Image (cartoon, rainbow, N blue to C red; front, side, top):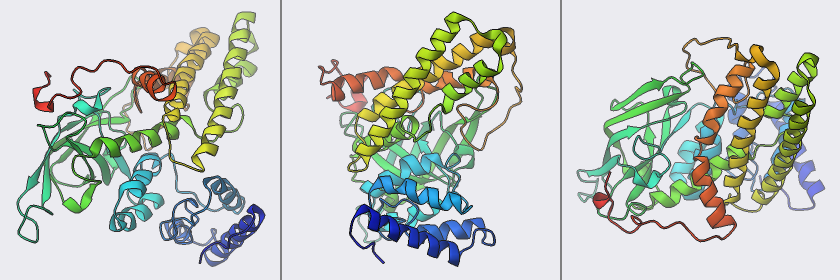
Length: 410
């Protein structure tokens, strides 16, 4: 049943009634977690700005926070967004924007409930900052059901790297080269891959934190049906850009209370350790606190803009600032702690279930922050995006832009 149009107060009352009906039909205290999440999706309370039938009600994005508050007050379970962030923040909005109706119905519900974890197969050893240089190949395989090649499947071969959650993912968003004769930005196609295919091999990449949060993924004759292609053949760059814009907002534009994240950790260290306080460190802490607060408020403005449109290049500025602040503040915390900051709690090789930018001790935070300026787009690339697409500055010369991919030296 659709939400009755009216004032925001009317819509909120309608949402409150829907939440109450969900809670009475599926009491959180006696309902299995996954069953409750499925029911919440079916009630349109997963992400209210999505269309009806796809976990939403077609409402303003900003009303989601109201729904979350009501459910949290009732003790309802969440869908562990830190564990399925790639699916929620990247795969879902891309599938919604470019997917067929069948793809939306097939993938969005298990994605939101966490029954299918997603990973991102974009970067490669020779195509990190320059994603359009990727070399993983996807070629048509045989004939389709009508005897032609129009609906034939694809065979994919190549290597991907820096893949978070690949060791526990069921599905993947994948960009591969389908036309080596076209310029590099024009010859790519976007797919929804099955990580359980026998041709998928996942190997851990151990980081300077000691854990293997990332992976490298080898694809050998991986078969993907054409029904799992997202967007048109050759439009992979366009679809991938939508994914990347959503990723940068997901990393840099999260809703957060004052003094949360890295600044909260550093401020807590300052308050608990009077022996480390100096006027110079105090000045730097206050400057960092102001920057963090400006960043938080700018994120609020960005989310308000998203309530009426798709992510734009402004999200790149948020992610760029997030990385800079995380590295600056974690370094300041180590300086505060002196010798204590050099201690590191655990070098044990682990494969974490979720990404945690601020967890564990100060040493972990300092080391983990080094990756913030790489993941989700390097800071150098993001500066180019902000300069060209936000500030309107001239683009950098790109001598290989119109060359066939196969003719570009590698």
